[in-house]
Image (tube, rainbow, N blue to C red):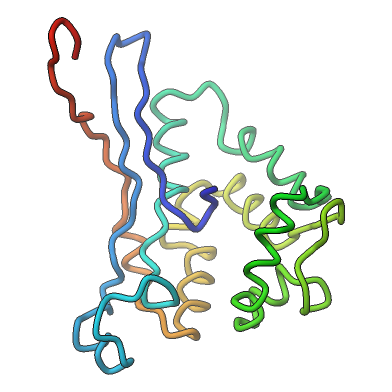
Length: 195
């Protein structure tokens, strides 16, 4: 359940290279986040939610890294189905409708979330109700046209940073610009005849 604003971790086997590889596309904390800033905002510990908890989203960098290294399709081709679904909508499943209902109060507390995810700004969609997200579709189209750089330092990244700043977030555009996914060797251990 990770989207454009989340992180990405992958472990995959490359048959061509005959090796197991790992990808860490997780983001760091914003450069404006300091213990002092947290205390000024009334936090004694690192918050588990809200704007102060938001790190640099790494998912897009992970998508790009995986496609660059192993892909057979372009980012635009990969994003096309998700773009269409976000634009045209989809019927909400019973499980997702229930989970959405459980988050209505939280979503209502943020103007952007309320406008995006609550029907008439008041309630989550019912099971079977059609949900569309044209802003997400627009973001996917920007990524498809301009690549990951539009997120990591470009117009889409600026929108994220500015919106988060209004809520009290700690990310800067430079934080996004400095982000990159990292190929890593997955940890392993030998046990009998197996690794």
